[in-house]
Length: 207
Image (cartoon, rainbow, N blue to C red; front, side, top):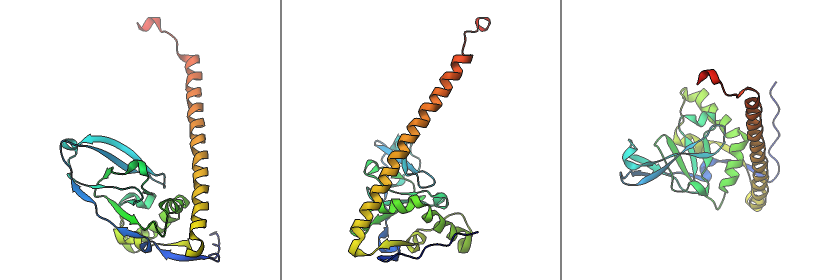
């Protein structure tokens, strides 16, 4: 049974992402004697991670895209499983292939972190899947599809206050997630060591 959705609250409106996003092509030619930082977008809205660092001579496709802080990065094929993210400062200047779409964010209207909040909700993924399962009938999206997606957004009179509160809330949740991940890693290491203490002996016969 599908859950009945709430009506849009007072002080909010529906807005197409095209109001705050502009498709940006940032292709350039790789130089063989320079080192480049290659990144990828993780699935399910989990952000951007470094893939590797390579000298230009080792990069076969010479036309790449350079990403900038506060842009929005979308994977052409994996958008259907949540592969998109706002670009944090730490990845400013990194590169991605032509299988990604880049968008400039009008930061005077929307904070990149607010858009990341919407990514974290999973609703952007659901909207992208509607395109793929409906009219398109193939697994990739095109750049203009992102621009036509409608999201709830606060009216200008209190947009700053709403965005600040929501971004702070997401930051607090991410902090809890990082703590939980460290605890999980510690328990996995404890499990491994506890079992090694039981089974890890010198096998004299195997010398």
